[in-house]
Image (cartoon, rainbow, N blue to C red):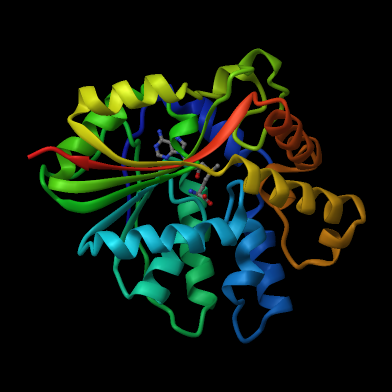
Length: 284
Ligand SMILES: C[S@@+](CC[C@H](N)C(=O)[O-])C[C@H]1O[C@@H](n2cnc3c(N)ncnc32)[C@H](O)[C@@H]1O
């Protein structure tokens, strides 16, 4: 199922950021040539785990998802579908993916068609700030590095509360502002310039969640392990090891990805950004 909805003008900047260098056809061609039997989750990770921490971070999130024991899951800003595929293959739970970048949803679907265990993903092109679902539809909603692009996080969280069932859960794996946000270097993978980056502080996030009707259940700072992971990736990129991989984040973000990746290291080292995992429960 793939539905396209009118997403309005407010999101054109995000669309431009993710689609300007994106070459979905090249990605599919490369995957097909390099992995005729279908790529594994690890072979896809450079493009479908588009967040700080890669597939390792997504595997860690699976533990939280398992604890929630959800029936209906919504992944907001699902990108090329790495987390969705892991949840479906490891936990046997169906997930609905929603993303504003239509080209990502199209390539997500094509990637799934290359896999031996093909299951048509349920994808919707829409804006997380105006969810096209009835109230009380989901048990779990996930943001994995997508709230960072959303200008009106208050509205997005209110929409999450509306479509979550009472006592449903919200799981965030996000980038937030650190104590030294003024030292931020751009471009970063989610924004070429500051106007596209919508990071908030931990305090603001917590109060927005409470206002929207959530009770915070756990909060974990993953910045140190995220920094170690990104430093390792950077050293591979500098030794050109990543150029031998069939696919790379540069096929999504273009040649600027090198600079974006090294800026993430600087921003983490300077405490301009932090990486967090947070679980909140909808009130009754
Ligand atoms: C950094 S990528 C992360 C993708 C994916 N979650 C992952 O971790 O691989 C951010 C994603 O959020 C999507 N996004 C940004 N703003 C959005 C919005 N308002 N509504 C829905 N998706 C949005 C982008 O199109 C992009 O796919």
